[in-house]
Image (cartoon, rainbow, N blue to C red; front, side):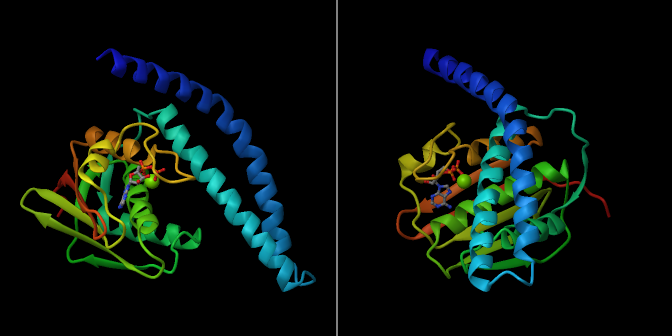
Length: 229
Ligand code: ADP
Ligand code: MG
């Protein structure tokens, strides 16, 4: 219990620091990215240089991502609007976003949305949750492997599955998910799953992880459905 307290305290301080610094870093990043995007479109610029610009933009996107992860831990927003979230739309825009940020490493995302699913939550938070989980699935996969995503109604629940055939996790690794700063990646923040569990809890959802080392992982996300039809 003492250890947990210490961790909560550590997280609080990290959060305050992150919130204080994030905006200061985010603004200059946005300015630099804006110019790079402009130069990247300049017809006078050679293709070789353009490639360098794109690389720079992609690195800035990564930095922006880390900052927003830190910010969502730093300032859990408790007065966001609760809306009727169209799960299929959010899944589509989450995968589009990963695509446009160049984060799909030639992985094929197979979206299987059989029916309309609605939940009562904040759209941005649900999108954040799905992006974090899909991003993990891609990062665990080999280049070119598919990631399958399904969404369907199961009685009173909306059930979303994100299935990858990547490196998988041991039992201990699965149990460590959601622990702040737990990451086995060289560039990981170890905050992604923690954010996901927080968002799920907020809207009375659950996240269940089944994984086999070397075979892959299935993450099942369930939310009470909002009957909007
Ligand atoms: P990060 O992605 O920044 O490392 P996360 O909280 O998102 O932080 O994930 C924590 C760790 O859990 C990852 O570093 C990885 O080792 C493991 N993990 C999460 N999702 C998967 C997955 N789909 N397959 C294999 N390992 C995973
Ligand atoms: Mg992650």
